Length: 174
Image 1 (cartoon, rainbow, N blue to C red):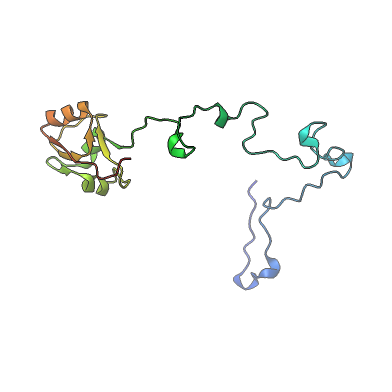
Image 2: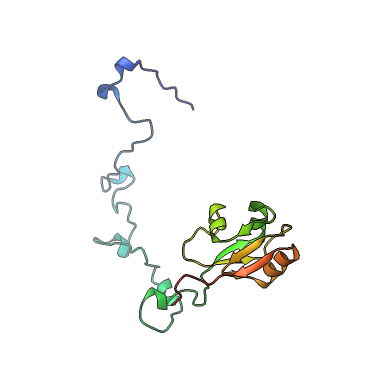
Protein backbone atom coordinates (compact mmCIF):
# COMPACT_ATOMS: atom_id res chain seq x y z
CA UNK A 1 0.00 0.00 0.00
CA UNK A 2 2.34 2.67 -1.19
CA UNK A 3 0.75 6.06 -0.96
CA UNK A 4 1.90 8.54 -3.53
CA UNK A 5 2.79 11.98 -2.26
CA UNK A 6 1.49 14.68 -4.50
CA UNK A 7 4.25 16.93 -5.69
CA UNK A 8 3.29 20.50 -4.81
CA UNK A 9 5.12 23.29 -6.60
CA UNK A 10 7.38 25.32 -4.32
CA UNK A 11 5.17 28.39 -4.60
CA UNK A 12 2.15 26.56 -3.11
CA UNK A 13 3.86 25.18 0.02
CA UNK A 14 2.83 27.13 3.10
CA UNK A 15 1.21 26.88 6.51
CA UNK A 16 -2.23 26.70 4.91
CA UNK A 17 -1.60 23.32 3.24
CA UNK A 18 0.66 21.50 5.76
CA UNK A 19 -0.82 18.41 7.39
CA UNK A 20 0.61 15.50 9.38
CA UNK A 21 1.59 12.33 7.55
CA UNK A 22 -1.13 9.65 7.44
CA UNK A 23 -1.21 7.44 10.55
CA UNK A 24 0.99 9.72 12.66
CA UNK A 25 -1.90 11.15 14.72
CA UNK A 26 -4.46 9.18 16.70
CA UNK A 27 -7.58 10.50 18.42
CA UNK A 28 -7.62 10.53 22.21
CA UNK A 29 -9.17 7.48 23.94
CA UNK A 30 -12.40 8.68 25.55
CA UNK A 31 -13.15 6.25 28.37
CA UNK A 32 -16.47 5.81 30.13
CA UNK A 33 -18.65 6.91 27.19
CA UNK A 34 -21.04 3.97 26.96
CA UNK A 35 -20.82 0.26 26.29
CA UNK A 36 -20.73 0.65 22.53
CA UNK A 37 -17.45 2.57 22.66
CA UNK A 38 -15.53 -0.47 23.90
CA UNK A 39 -14.20 1.43 26.91
CA UNK A 40 -17.44 2.04 28.78
CA UNK A 41 -18.61 0.85 32.23
CA UNK A 42 -15.26 0.04 33.95
CA UNK A 43 -13.28 2.25 31.54
CA UNK A 44 -10.66 -0.36 30.73
CA UNK A 45 -9.68 -0.87 34.40
CA UNK A 46 -11.15 -4.35 34.89
CA UNK A 47 -13.53 -5.39 37.64
CA UNK A 48 -12.14 -5.19 41.18
CA UNK A 49 -8.80 -4.73 42.90
CA UNK A 50 -6.39 -1.90 43.60
CA UNK A 51 -5.95 -1.10 39.91
CA UNK A 52 -9.65 -0.37 39.47
CA UNK A 53 -9.83 2.10 42.37
CA UNK A 54 -9.44 5.83 42.19
CA UNK A 55 -5.92 7.10 42.86
CA UNK A 56 -4.23 3.81 42.04
CA UNK A 57 -0.67 4.07 40.79
CA UNK A 58 1.74 1.34 39.80
CA UNK A 59 5.20 1.90 41.28
CA UNK A 60 8.05 1.16 38.91
CA UNK A 61 9.72 -1.23 41.39
CA UNK A 62 6.52 -2.99 42.51
CA UNK A 63 6.64 -6.73 41.82
CA UNK A 64 3.07 -7.77 42.49
CA UNK A 65 3.56 -8.36 46.20
CA UNK A 66 6.52 -10.74 45.97
CA UNK A 67 9.78 -9.85 47.73
CA UNK A 68 11.40 -7.06 45.66
CA UNK A 69 14.80 -7.64 44.07
CA UNK A 70 16.59 -5.05 46.19
CA UNK A 71 15.50 -6.97 49.29
CA UNK A 72 16.36 -10.38 47.79
CA UNK A 73 19.94 -9.45 46.90
CA UNK A 74 22.78 -10.11 49.34
CA UNK A 75 24.21 -7.22 51.31
CA UNK A 76 27.69 -6.45 52.59
CA UNK A 77 28.62 -4.99 55.94
CA UNK A 78 29.52 -1.36 56.30
CA UNK A 79 27.90 2.02 55.88
CA UNK A 80 24.98 2.22 53.50
CA UNK A 81 26.79 3.45 50.43
CA UNK A 82 27.12 2.01 46.97
CA UNK A 83 30.76 1.19 47.66
CA UNK A 84 29.88 -1.10 50.53
CA UNK A 85 27.06 -2.94 48.79
CA UNK A 86 28.20 -3.90 45.29
CA UNK A 87 26.62 -6.91 43.64
CA UNK A 88 30.09 -8.39 43.03
CA UNK A 89 32.29 -7.63 46.03
CA UNK A 90 35.57 -8.96 44.60
CA UNK A 91 35.47 -7.38 41.14
CA UNK A 92 38.84 -6.26 39.81
CA UNK A 93 38.86 -2.94 38.01
CA UNK A 94 41.04 -3.42 34.94
CA UNK A 95 40.64 -2.97 31.20
CA UNK A 96 41.18 -6.20 29.32
CA UNK A 97 43.13 -6.25 26.06
CA UNK A 98 43.49 -9.57 24.25
CA UNK A 99 46.41 -10.90 22.24
CA UNK A 100 44.25 -11.08 19.10
CA UNK A 101 43.74 -7.30 19.34
CA UNK A 102 47.50 -6.74 19.58
CA UNK A 103 48.05 -9.06 16.61
CA UNK A 104 45.53 -7.16 14.48
CA UNK A 105 46.60 -3.61 15.34
CA UNK A 106 50.40 -3.60 15.85
CA UNK A 107 53.33 -4.33 13.53
CA UNK A 108 56.29 -6.53 14.51
CA UNK A 109 58.75 -4.78 16.81
CA UNK A 110 56.23 -2.15 17.98
CA UNK A 111 56.14 -0.84 21.54
CA UNK A 112 52.76 -1.48 23.15
CA UNK A 113 52.21 1.04 25.96
CA UNK A 114 49.21 2.98 27.25
CA UNK A 115 49.53 5.75 24.65
CA UNK A 116 49.86 3.30 21.75
CA UNK A 117 46.86 1.29 22.97
CA UNK A 118 44.78 4.46 23.23
CA UNK A 119 45.73 5.57 19.71
CA UNK A 120 44.70 2.17 18.32
CA UNK A 121 41.30 2.34 20.08
CA UNK A 122 42.12 -0.14 22.85
CA UNK A 123 42.12 0.65 26.60
CA UNK A 124 40.43 4.02 26.20
CA UNK A 125 39.17 4.45 29.80
CA UNK A 126 41.26 6.89 31.82
CA UNK A 127 42.89 5.94 35.15
CA UNK A 128 41.89 2.27 34.93
CA UNK A 129 44.77 -0.24 34.81
CA UNK A 130 45.28 -2.28 31.62
CA UNK A 131 45.71 -6.05 31.65
CA UNK A 132 46.78 -8.19 28.69
CA UNK A 133 44.86 -11.48 28.43
CA UNK A 134 45.72 -14.53 26.33
CA UNK A 135 42.67 -14.78 24.08
CA UNK A 136 43.90 -15.30 20.52
CA UNK A 137 47.29 -15.97 18.94
CA UNK A 138 50.36 -13.72 18.68
CA UNK A 139 53.01 -14.21 15.99
CA UNK A 140 54.87 -10.87 16.23
CA UNK A 141 57.61 -9.77 18.60
CA UNK A 142 56.18 -6.89 20.65
CA UNK A 143 57.49 -4.88 23.59
CA UNK A 144 54.60 -4.68 26.03
CA UNK A 145 54.52 -2.09 28.87
CA UNK A 146 51.22 -2.32 30.80
CA UNK A 147 49.95 -2.63 34.38
CA UNK A 148 49.29 -6.40 34.39
CA UNK A 149 49.67 -9.46 32.17
CA UNK A 150 48.17 -12.89 32.69
CA UNK A 151 50.63 -15.78 32.96
CA UNK A 152 49.55 -17.41 29.70
CA UNK A 153 49.65 -14.07 27.86
CA UNK A 154 53.20 -13.42 29.13
CA UNK A 155 54.22 -16.89 27.94
CA UNK A 156 52.71 -16.29 24.49
CA UNK A 157 54.39 -12.87 24.11
CA UNK A 158 57.80 -14.22 25.11
CA UNK A 159 57.36 -17.27 22.86
CA UNK A 160 56.77 -14.91 19.92
CA UNK A 161 60.06 -13.14 20.73
CA UNK A 162 58.66 -10.16 22.60
CA UNK A 163 59.27 -8.74 26.06
CA UNK A 164 56.95 -7.80 28.92
CA UNK A 165 57.53 -4.98 31.41
CA UNK A 166 55.02 -4.06 34.10
CA UNK A 167 54.41 -0.44 35.04
CA UNK A 168 53.17 0.81 38.41
CA UNK A 169 49.49 1.73 38.60
CA UNK A 170 48.97 5.50 38.72
CA UNK A 171 45.35 5.22 39.80
CA UNK A 172 44.87 5.63 43.53
CA UNK A 173 43.54 2.36 44.90
CA UNK A 174 41.56 2.81 48.08
